[in-house]
Length: 201
Image 1 (cartoon, rainbow, N blue to C red):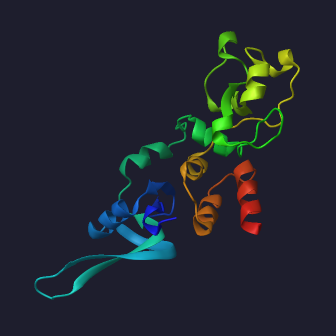
Image 2 (image 1 turned 180 degrees about the horizontal axis):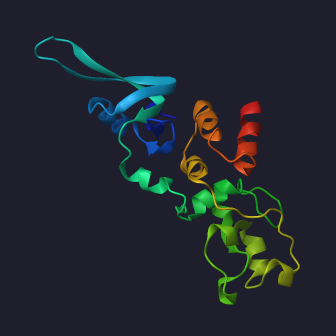
């Protein structure tokens, strides 16, 4: 993977995870004096222009985690009433790309969003009523509940916390970023156990 496409984890000054930013946004935050400190691995240096007075070239080091003074839009997500927006990519990540009916692992294009209590029966399109299902199991279940279809649900769905959602939205999350986010997960988080397996492996 191209180093410049690596996502940078942005936190607030106290270390609470906020969002993912690209290297351009990270450099801009550095230049605006918003970066309080950096954590994680040094990924690369970005070389800027040459100062007309000092004749020195500016260099901005980019790390995998940056703590910033400003919060931006991400701060609004940090209250207790925030519910992460539901999307299939994050849902499939939450359930580890496993169909929660047959237990097999699939590629994203082979998966679908299944409503445990179907919309046609008054079910809601929210995190606690949806699971990842392969296309075959979803068709088999159709507009019925698992009980009505004689199908067993393998895990109970849950709404991710803000930190868990930041993790689910990440691409090519680095080990140091995983460890940092893991520390902000609830003690009994299924995602915490998943990260533990990945880091141990």
